[in-house]
Image 1 (cartoon, one colour):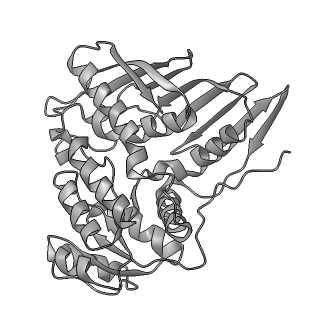
Image 2: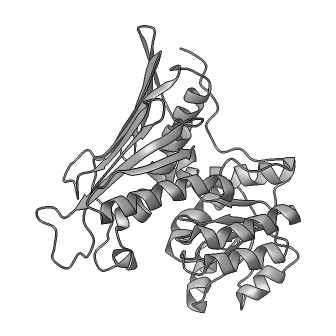
Image 3: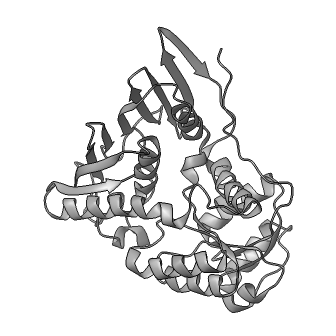
Length: 350
């Protein structure tokens, strides 16, 4: 069996200290468990609802303190990294405040719905030597991370096509704040799928994209958003990508299968239920056993890469500026869907 590339979360010897700004459900079910699992120091947390922050400290006794305000958190000299886990609304303001305070940031995805409001903050961060990363934690989901490493090593030659199928139930949408987001599947949920796809197509440019979403049989009338969505993209060299969510799938074997086809081989695998990675090349098929899960190891990986970037004085792999291409894909998908699947000509470098 070929040597397996390293895909697990990595951390520098000296680990910066973290404070979580916005310690709601995702922070308590993924961020904090990930940091606890890997022994990362959480100096403190803040929530706009004090009781929420207190519950977080009760659940994770290693949390140093509960801040009375976000401003107090940002002013704390013991905080090196702000884990910004608030909703996208107003995120540019929090990012600017963190940069002004000299704090590095891991910002929740999607970074923003208005990229133009972020660019001046990124320029300010560059000038100040502050690193801003986006919590595209799925890049470190074990199956996807290993697939990325194989692609980067040239295991399948040049990538010809990427295909994703969402073969599992949808998370709760109806009745949540997510259902108020127009084209929610395209604009929020599938951000991870579009982001990892552009990682696998790195170095290419997207010539055009089209997307659609629609309601499905059995979808309750109370659900505002469509439960099915499809995104198709074609690169300038002819490489292509397809992402498809068929709806709220009923199955006893949920999974999210993917295929990466190249000029010299293929990678196929799945996550979120039936995790595996398989490399086929030269008539030989190698199946890799992976350790960990997207939740929570992917979240640890995203933080670890930021920590390494800080230690090495470089941009993180998931930098906010890098993430602008993901946001452009997401925006094009939403726009196409709002125009009944119209083709969007992009010429977008990945």
